[in-house]
Image (cartoon, rainbow, N blue to C red; front, side, top):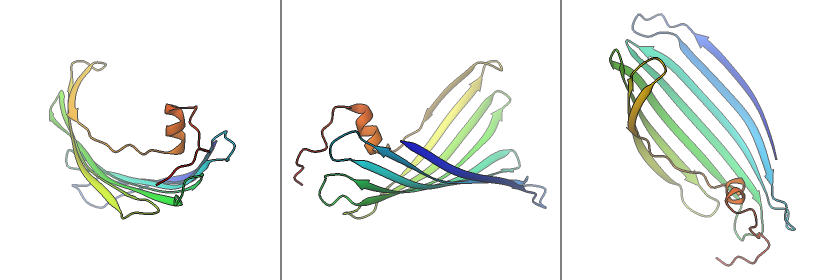
Length: 168
């Protein structure tokens, strides 16, 4: 397995009193995972991550984009590639000196090699209460979509046999 990435970041000053500067980053990379089986099952991932942050009055705002294109070498009929796309907008504001509100809206989209695009839209909310500088109590609702990859399947069951005949 290997992971190779290249990133860049910068800050752009905005001429508005209500908005602070715009910080943005981008990362492009690829990773590879190979299973140690007789059929040489492997997974190759190309990805692009980017984000931008700013402040609007007392609210911190951030937008994120993640795109992944995955290709597989496996003994599974009709399995070719897949695309994974995440859009996320989140913010943070102080309701009181020791109480913060974190809110977000995420859009997950996935398209496999044989089916239509499917997606989910998830809201997130979290309250954080700071007892001291080092102690926080928080409660929230944070749904997510888990991406099943060859690496995650093998982590769950390292004795899996990819050479077995799979019939759709």
